[in-house]
Image (tube, rainbow, N blue to C red; front, side):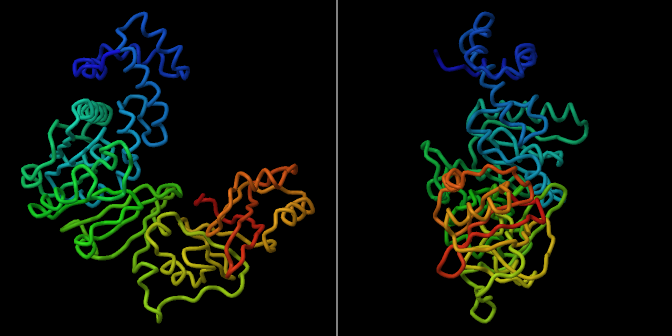
Length: 407
């Protein structure tokens, strides 16, 4: 099969392809789908329609309107979900015009499109075609709400010189293998630095585990953003988009709540301000949102709620049952040195099976642990078995979850 042409991609986003996309939108058997489509379409167009149906089904967790959008496999994987993009776009609302460089299929571009002078750029022509189609679809569905457009171009200084602020999502896998080294991204750190020299009002989207260039560390505000308990991205805010230069921020988007913590990384906290590790368990165990762990701000959360860490980057404990959308709370029912046989005996005596088994700072396979426990009792949705490092040993904690916002 030859590769689809640009004309094929333009056909896909047009009215002609719509009947095939709509008629088979719930088909999950790809072989059956392609076989049916090839009776009516060319091999290339049949493959494009089949892939689009598959990707739309996968995209529903990120985009509520996925059934009318267009995706590439890589574009969907790297795209910012609509909730996270909307949160990020709040920093741009008083600004314009805007540019979204390396816009991909338009996750951030769609949210930035609340400004009527937003333009997206992507060097890959099919991707730019999809981004433009996605913006066009949302403009039609929500008149007056989305104005963004997409163009095919590489990111260069001309684009950032002509706008008030800009966003960029560099490709983290230009050679096919994902990397967290900004020097190996496309555009590279050197290219992005040149863009910053022209216009410093920028937001750079990175992977949560990225080790940023040293030249950026004190010039940006660093924000780790999680949605529904999973850390999705790190954003480096520069220039007029920063709120507090040099600060680390962890933001949890929890259903209807937005919760942020900011401060100094755990490793950089002075001895005078560092809270000692717990020498005993309190009545409750606490697990901050994934963004807090990614940003290394557990000490900030511990101080705010008067809690103590069990170990570096681990769970927190205390005697007061705090309730917060970004901090899961568990009442400790039993605690014992971790041994599979003893844990199994405890669960059998209680006639219960935990809904979830969690760990932090413990090198074990949770799927294997669940098999070894041979759980037969009815699952208790509020019961959690947590393996935590306490000092130099691993402790098994049978708990009752008090909040359910963090998974």
